[in-house]
Length: 61
Image (cartoon, rainbow, N blue to C red; front, side, top):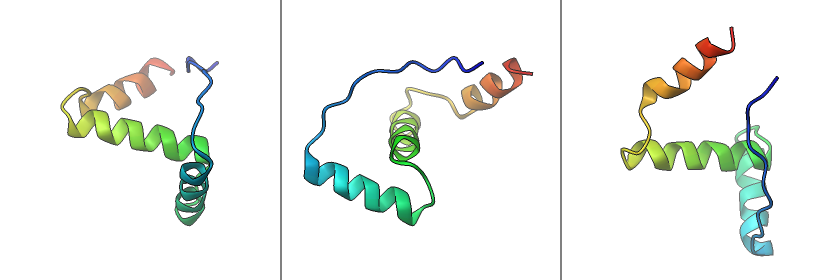
């Protein structure tokens, strides 16, 4: 079972269309693209360590 948190996100229509195109170009869903962008931003800002993602994957086993 997934331990992901769901929430509502209101976003400008033009921004959504740009995200949708970008996600399609990278073979992701819009949701997947947003998750990837947030994860990358957190890592780049030093707010999330790269090992945390692999640690979570190991916790699911």
